Length: 341
Ligand SMILES: [Zn+2]
Image (cartoon, rainbow, N blue to C red; front, side, top):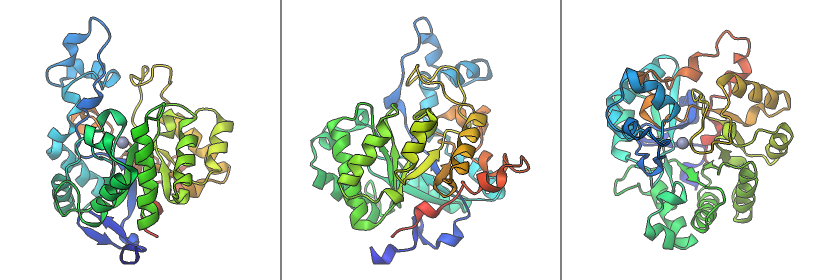
């Protein structure tokens, strides 16, 4: 796509890459995650309702997907705006907003936040996991899905003329469903037509990222312009991680700030701490993958916001200074993935 080549497409238009500054490649600023509500353990039902308060915050932090109001990030635009201003002040420049169809993408709010804060915001095209696909989406062919993704990037998404600048996060479950498989093929086709970056949310199984890369490659994607998100909770075995790294996509550790004992979406997974994330990233850097690593916080529920005692969007831009590891770790908060071919 010659007109977009070498540029980055934000919700306010094209930007030169050297204006982006520090970039978080996987965040959400407005989103509705109600479709992924997890029923609580028996006896805890009364804790699901009502407002977020100090006295129930510990429970919400451990059961973020069981508290109904916690899933409504879209109600917190003022708090998000305040955080973006802190992010900017701390030296942050750009946020890739990964909310796709199915979890409440809101182009008008993204545009407003970009205008009011001066932070570059890049919106995501495409579809989240199968459980959020509408019956129309489920019935679409790969060509129809490709057409929608391309249109969201070239003409605007959700009935607005505000354009997406990446494809993703594209949601995949484990096992991958038929509809998700078609969306992945459409993602690859849109990428080969446009030369745009792609961001993937893999299913929660260490084989999932391998399967996804294979499907994308077979459908014509450019793996070197593809981000595999959420590796923190997906590949734990070092040998397997290095095997995956060889495939050449971006390796994203994007759940910084998420620490809990019981991971509701997959109880067998031990969610790592931030220090364990850093240890993994250091290992990948030592193995020569520094240029392929990306880091973010994937804020997607209310309890992650500063207003509720959460980790701010600017944590990565500030926290690792002076710890002796920031020179190469800090460089992982960056943007080359966002350039168009
Ligand atoms: Zn996400």
